Amino acid sequence: MRFGRTIATAYAAGIVLASADAAFAAPSSRHDANRIADFSFGVFCPPGKSYKTSADDTIRGETTRYDDSPVLVLKTQTIPAIDGITFGVEGRENQESPADVTIVVDHPPMGSDGVTRESWTTQMEEQRITFHGYFLGMADGNPNGLWTITGIRDGQELFHTEFEVIPGKSADPDEDDPCLTMLIS
Image 1 (cartoon, helix red, strand yellow):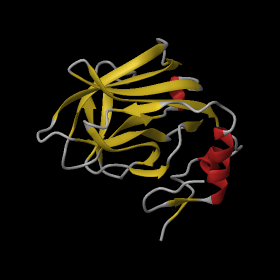
Image 2 (cartoon, one colour):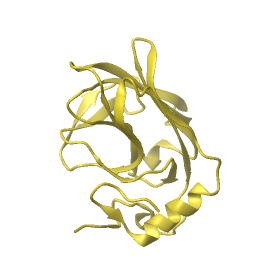
Image 3 (cartoon, helix red, strand yellow):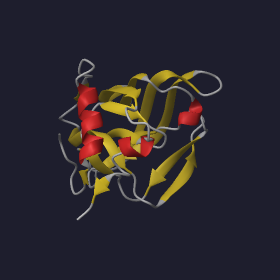
Image 4 (cartoon, helix red, strand yellow):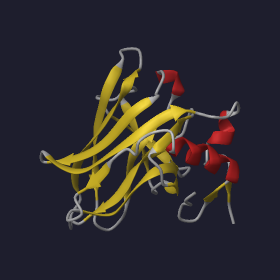
C-alpha cells in the first residue's frame, strides 16, 4: 500500500483499493517528461476553498477550481465508485509563462444525455503543481469502467492517464473513501 505526501490513508481504505488493483490489468499512464515535471496520479483530497467556473463541454456546465492543489493521498489508477471521490493527475509544466491546456475526460456514458466525453480549458504553470481531475457524482449515473484524463496544448498531448472505476467494496461508502478515513498527525 502506498501513502500520500502528508496524510496516510486508514488501513481499511487501503485494503479496499489495494485489492481492487489486482482485479484488472494495469491501466496506462504517460506524459511528456520534457514538458511536464512532478507528474503523479491517483485519489486526491480537495482543499476546502473552491469556486466554480463555466465549462460548457461538461455534464454540469461548470468546473470546480481550487486556490490550493488537492492532496494526493493514494497513488492508484483503480478508483472505487464512491459519491464525491476525487481522482486525477497533477504536474508542473516546464514553461516560464502559464498557457492554456485543454483537459479531456473520456468515461462511460453518464448524465441524462449519456455523455462520454467532457472537456474544459485550464492552465499549467512552471512555479506550482496543478491538479486536473474529476469529482465523481453518483447521481450522474454508473461510472464503472475505463476513464482517461488527457492534457492537450496546441494539438500536442502533454499527458494521458487511464483509470479503472470499479464498484466500492464496502456496504458503507464512507469506509471506502480515503479522504473520510485518513489519519492526520
